[in-house]
Length: 160
Image (tube, rainbow, N blue to C red; front, side, top):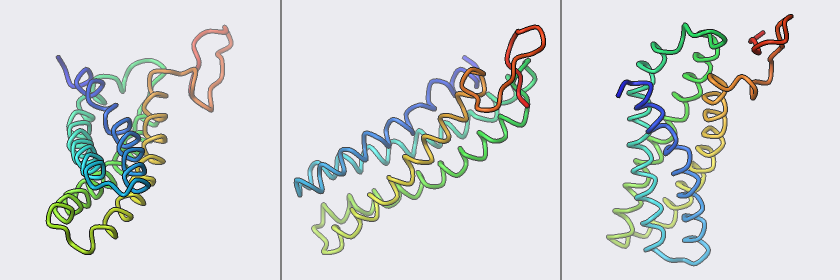
């Protein structure tokens, strides 16, 4: 198993985990249920760990595909820039989630404030996750690239 394969295995969880975690956190806030909230926090912590794994395998994956036809370094660089932003937000969300988990267990007064901070960060993470996932998909799926043209021969799409 090489870095490109490992990257493909782990890169989906930071996006999907954040979406699920956000939904669970919203349910916890609506129901005012700390057990459900702790579940969301644990999902966010695991999501941050998978973000780390995605970042750790990304460079190796880049090396394997950057010279393939119709890919190019520009599109990979755009994905890498988005992924770095998402990773920072997910690391922050993971730290806030650890604090929220501790505050919930110790029944701290500020636990509610931490939950709304986590909610805000998670919304930002979902937005960045969508952009990161789309830019990653565009690397190999030329049909979803916004700026593609067919070659003269009607063959494979090429980046502008």
